[in-house]
Length: 193
Image (cartoon, rainbow, N blue to C red; front, side, top):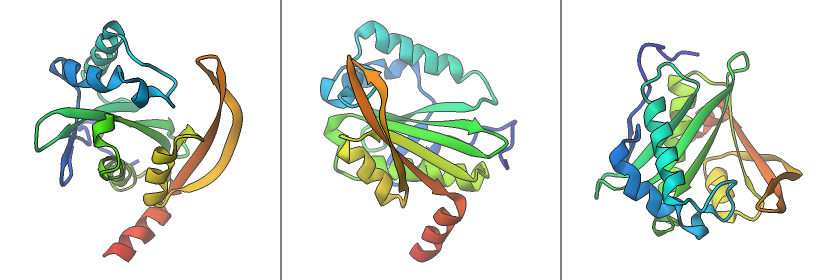
């Protein structure tokens, strides 16, 4: 990997967003989306209680003191308002194979605006160009059309569907797996240039 182990590869600024380490002061914003049953409907967590949100934000803040680390959870701040509207995670799954997975969550007021695509695109760009990864992948509940449409917009391909691979809230979930290789991302970048 090409990442400088002495220096984090974030924050990342996009046209509308700042992807940055979480702060304890983000609690209210994180709880606003984390407690929403619609937001967590297809997730393996939530809806969050105030105590769970406090634990999550506390864990993110504690993790920010560690560097280097293989998993990074970033708050997604909307530049226009300074509010945290979601979170995005990148986790190295295999250093030897230069592979990572990522995931994201956004408040429902920010769905269908290209925000998840913008944030995930920035994470993928960092994964391939800054970290020198070979492959990134993401998963989602097969019913989460919005999430897999984001992945498809980014050029990720569905590699398969895992049948009844997770039991969540007493129901077995089927999971789509999407992935993208560094050379595929580079080809997309060249097409857009």
